[in-house]
Image 1 (spheres, helix red, strand yellow):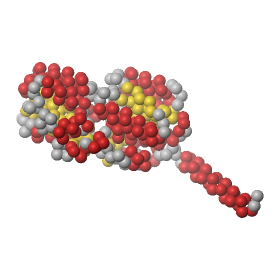
Image 2: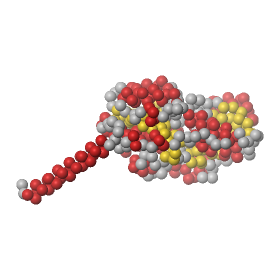
Image 3: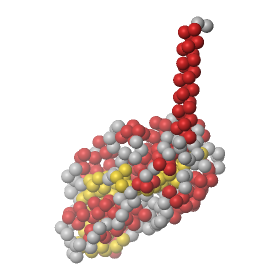
Length: 368
């Protein structure tokens, strides 16, 4: 072997050694235990698969899984906390380390889920629901982050537009999601914060509809039977329930007399605002996507698992933060029609910075 070839091989060996040392040093700087990619299973949970938000959540989870080259397991709770927790536990028992993003049915489910992930040696991010006074940093590294959208702001978005559409007077029926749901409670509080300033607005009734379009249809029919033409507005904590209420009001031949607001700006609701097949009756819906929430949470947990982020160096807002939303009305609804309102480059940009949509820390109650 020539001297020049030996020199080149030596240089390559030194370079390779340098790279391995750099990689090892990078891993050494990460405070939490890491997991090899091949030992990971990505897991996402949804309340049901019929709600458009949940369908979007599944889509976002799968899209990220494809980018990462890993399959995604889906756990459906079907409205049962026990089913949800048992599904996660069954996957944990298979041996691989779980990287979980969960939209738990109820806030009270989170401690059991966190304990399962801790025992498994995996990592998780939780979206939407968490018990009061519970913080990821207090639980441990396996609970990487909690994310949400501002439920108060979202509730106010719909309420303000609904009250304006009603001319500042009349009766409203409200359909929250689940009573033991942090974000549902926030959205209802946003509604009530708005209507307290309108003495001619009456909140006729408040009946949870479990984030379910079919349940919302039946619930609204029951409220129509009770209140009849006293109903001038329908406020719902998400768009699936709004679509169910919309159908009920239409079947009762009241569509010309009632206005609606929802939450989530689901594509069918955006289309109703743009096309107005029954007139200008949908007042507003705040925009965010299950796609974005699921992909963001799963990516944060994944990067923690493989050592691409150091949990000890995350800011308090990154451990428990809120993410950007918009308020969609008939005036701007066209801007949210294409591609479900999601920029086609969004996921690639997210992979570079999983916190790019973070706008603040824990959600605070409405002012005033």
